[in-house]
Image (cartoon, rainbow, N blue to C red; front, side, top):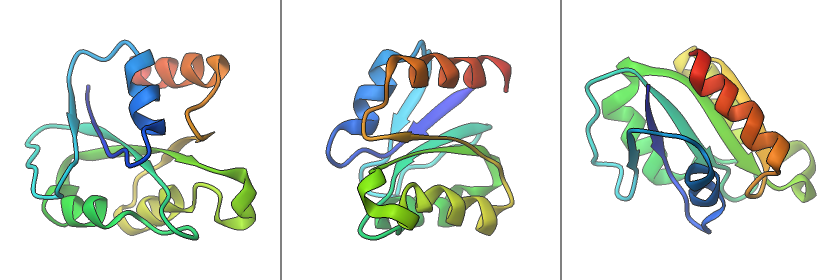
Length: 118
């Protein structure tokens, strides 16, 4: 399945680089277009917000989203990975996994299993 991702500080990019992904698209402006089912990887911006480029992307590409995987920082407490919860509710898709910063080896393994079985 196609993977679409946004990475501002490089944490999500590092996770993507560790996964066995054959097709990926990085959201840079929010104007990218996808016409096939995809998993969305995103970071959480500010204090639990969906990044603006991800929000813009979803405005035109929500028909094919199958789920969201989100990165965050536990130092933000309740806002940890909140972007995934917001996207999940707004687009009625599961938040499949949450990881801190660029993740651990266990996170990579768990996320690879999700990708392989979606």
